[in-house]
Every structure is written in C-alpha cells, then in structure tokens.
Image (cartoon, rainbow, N blue to C red; front, side, top):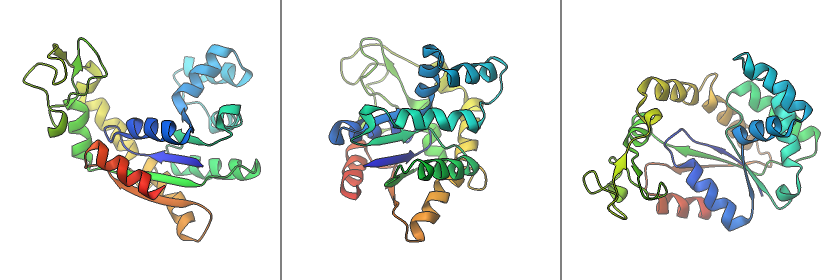
Length: 224
C-alpha cells in the first residue's frame, strides 16, 4: 500500500503517519530527510542539491524527484510507503505522477487531512514542551491535552515554548503555500483528487483534522 499524505502544519499529519507506519509496516518517507540523507551520504544527487541549498536557492524538481524515486525503491519500501512533504505544488504533482508511472510504481491512496487554517495556526502556537519529556503532549488550544497551567499534564514538569512555534510570520508563510488551491500544496492534492474522480486506480480520502487524535486515527484506518 503506497500512500501520499497531505495536511497543513498543525494537522497531526506526522502523528497519523507514524501510526500508519507501525500498523502496516510501511516506510514513512519525509522529503526533508531524503535531502539530508543524500547530502550526508555524499551521493551525486546530494552534491547537486547542496549546491543549490548553499546558494539559498530551491532544489530543482529534476534533482528532487529522482532522489524520491531512489528512496522509494529501497528495500524497506517494498511492503509499502507513505510519502510526506512532497509534492508542494501542482507542477511537482504532475511530474511526480509521471515519474512514478514511468517507473511502474503504483500510488494507491492519497490522504488529505482537512483543517481550518486558523485552527491549524492555533495548534502550532499552542504547543508546549515538557522539560522532562518532549513527547508528553501538551497544547493550550486542544482540550484533550491541555496542560495544568504552566505544568505538564502528564508529569507536572515545567513547560516551555519553541521559538519557531511562536513566529506568526513564518507560520503564515508556510500555511500560505499549503492552502493555496491554485498553485500551492492543495493544488497538488487536488490534482490527484481529480485523477481519482476520473476513475483511475488512486483512492482519495479525506479526514476531519479538527477531531481528536484517536478519532482521526479511527477514521483513517476505516478508510484505508
């Protein structure tokens, strides 16, 4: 089962992806990790990508997509994979679709987590880190995991904020790219949605990202 995952920052996409990985033994592939691994490993594609990154420029799709395909061909992807973080625009979606078909690699399911932009922003800005364990979930805007004042709801440890979680400008910029249904990430998702509507082999499913984690997981598993 090969899955493409879409969802804005703050939607819980990473959490749900990890659950899918564990349940179906699918490799959870994040585009950012692919760049880091290629650059660290000194691959030819990694060297090419680093030249652009060092100049502060975007890495061309002609480098990014072959990196992704190479990763999807690795042994841990034979049972299935979940790709997260790419494509980010419609043009990349088209190129990825063409590249997968050229390699006879199937894309079975596309998942889109639906979440209001303001709620997504609140969730990011509401995240709090526990001094004892960063994996303890605390968020002042989510009732189910709301901390006890300024103390961790799990262990009572001191809480702090991540600086990037409080950068409204950066959050708005990332969300501006994601929620752009004409040229941004949602446009990429809708490209696959249109393919699914045309009766192709792709199944397109949506999830209510405003629900609690367990409810989103239950909906996801029921639709896969």
